[in-house]
Image (cartoon, rainbow, N blue to C red; front, side):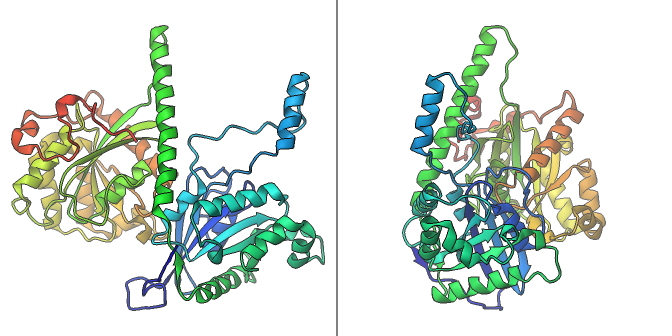
Length: 496
């Protein structure tokens, strides 16, 4: 289903950002999706050297427009029944098959259509990437049809075929001839997309004479015009079903890990449980704590865009660690006394939900905000008043809204931020990290954050976490929406 585009979509320059175009990239294995995403954005924002297992988002201003590109995992190519029969015959005969065995689907991999939710409210164009050097037959056609069908009805009017590897075409052969000679399946795909297609040579992306990106964006504009300015609105019910299926797979994996751990203990071997990290999100009102929590956990567990009233605890496996996060209500920007007593108690209550205590207090600070002496003193007063003098040993500054930095290194931003920002970081032992909270799934940045947290834990030695204090467990502080008492020792955590 579709929705009318917003003012920013139709070219209204009165807003804070330039008008936006959102592109969702889908395709099969080895199709060149990631390289194409980098070519469009004009930068190596995505790692083209590894398999994409989670959807990733990149943004760049291109020719006066803010372009959002979502790179997704490859769609699955359905098995060929004849290949399965041959494989069964070979196995029964004790012979080795010439074709490599297909690996089982990874539990870590998500369905490519989940990437659609990362460019809200929906993509203006869906680019179906097809490599010139890869076969495109009935199986590939069915894969494309299944993936577009998974998004719901009305998707094809927003689709365009993006051919990659055109440099591999024989000399004198144009893309139109390739489409004609490849077969009915590819012709069907192009026709299903309204005969909209474009060709990329990703080896030319650094060439000054490269016009393929401007030409692609012109075709995207034509597509938007043909759709009267509308974009594809993601069917959230379908995505919810896919997310629930993914969670079921992850829960099964966790059960398998727990079973393996218990078995190791029964036979006397060392436990292989995932290391646990307990993190408490703190900061002013409206700094993006909930979005940061979603980025770290890789899913939208916390409601961002609205004020957090009660503590909320969520848990997930992230980069091989069991990460538990508590999101808390925001503080007043200028005074501890202006922060309501209930909010101060709720912050302490959040720490108490991380029994026996949080490893790290993540002080969320937007890179776009300036830090005055009064603001810095207020932040430190909140931390020391609520969590004691030793809280500084467990506090890390986490810069949110990292996309605003562009190509500016965070160290340069800190130098420009002035003495007050530097004094805040000194209080935290110069432990800091920058995170783009608009792009859940940026595994590299999150992994580096967790590495930094573990470095802090090792440096703290026998004071690896901030112990829960008795006053944090007072009856007055029982406002949490987690519906579990700290004494339950996290048995009520939603492991999702």
